[in-house]
Image (tube, rainbow, N blue to C red):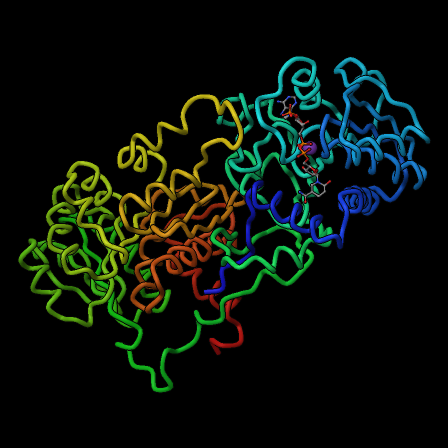
Length: 524
Ligand SMILES: NC(=O)C1=CN([C@@H]2O[C@H](COP(=O)(O)OP(=O)(O)OC[C@H]3O[C@@H](n4cnc5c(N)ncnc54)[C@H](OP(=O)(O)O)[C@@H]3O)[C@@H](O)[C@H]2O)[C@@H](O)CC1
Ligand SMILES: [K+]
């Protein structure tokens, strides 16, 4: 699967910047000038009529970018105030500051000064990738008062205080707060960073633009493959790094047969409890699994008659019956957990995991896993775990614990770190659900999928549908990391296409429309 756009950590970004400068082909001053120009250009694009800008410049290079923005906006006819610090910057930063001082003044970076005069925009260039600890003293006061400032905020690289590796505000609770600094627009450089997409990042960055500052040759010269990518990123990016996957709609042979698209087995719960598994099974059919069988206990088979007719039914009462069913090697993907009940899930897992088929563990299967330590040891690389935050905390309490409390220093431990650590520990793919869904593989590869714009996806049964989509993709032969990533993408796209008012039952039937969008040429 083409994996979308690469995400760079702040350390990787710094390394690329250093390599570029050491090559002698580009200087730090040139990079700063390009960064500042990119921000000024975006401001002028959105506010074509010159107005009043207040630019807040911090102690490091983020602040230097701010001085460039101030200079370029002044040249473009804006009335510009700059609030800055009386610190001793490095030579490049000093150069940028002097260039500004040749054309304008410098007021103290102070909350009262910020509010002393009105502005049409405020440019936040206080902290960027170098934020190392929670802001304190007067800088913290400026940031607090900026959060309630009436003018739109344009953030240079990120809203200041946001840790670009985790998406948490350093020194602040991780939950949503009225005191969060929310930018209207964030202009970041070269590549998105994890914090743009995780936790508070997407909401607080506002519109995110990734600006090209000429570092591409050094980014591409690195030998290692990207290990962290954004799936179907929804931000503007200046190059063609976002490639779509064309394999989804393709038949796997020139004479396709239903078995060439796999056979998914969805284990269901007892009488009257089959709805969740039916949602999963319907989604597995819609995503294109060749055959889908729903398997409740024998006495619950009548619950599933004709829903839908394409669904096959088979009674599976116990682990022995599942073991028998798995004698058919064509059954190549299992879904265990939705509506199954915890005891039944545990029994089924004991039979299923040794068979080493591709297996999605959701809902009750995750609870069963958290209660039986030996099952955790039976997981294998073809398993996909799909916990939400609560299930994750039951499965990996120590990892979830790292996310509690105030993030005290950067880079803060992130949901990405937690998902990666969990995948490495259990040897399976972990999809940690949320508005920022993270999909992590045991080898460290990870993907982030942001779906902050579809809050109506948080509806009963939506998780069962996701489990079914992933199971169907596994049946079709997608690797676990790809199946989980594409599953998250298609699930959110289906919800987006339906719009508010969605119930989980609507999701599977939106899948054909999403597939047409994703693979329009190859599916026809
Ligand atoms: N990478 C690139 O390609 C390019 C990057 N560019 C730009 O550079 C930015 C990164 O610059 P940067 O490394 O100087 O970091 P930045 O965010 O300005 O802050 C560091 C300063 O803040 C200080 N400090 C830290 N925490 C603090 C706290 N809580 N309270 C108080 N002080 C604190 C810290 O001091 P120290 O920790 O040493 O005390 C240091 O002085 C990046 O975001 C982008 O805008 C472009 O110009 C060109 C291309
Ligand atoms: K900033």
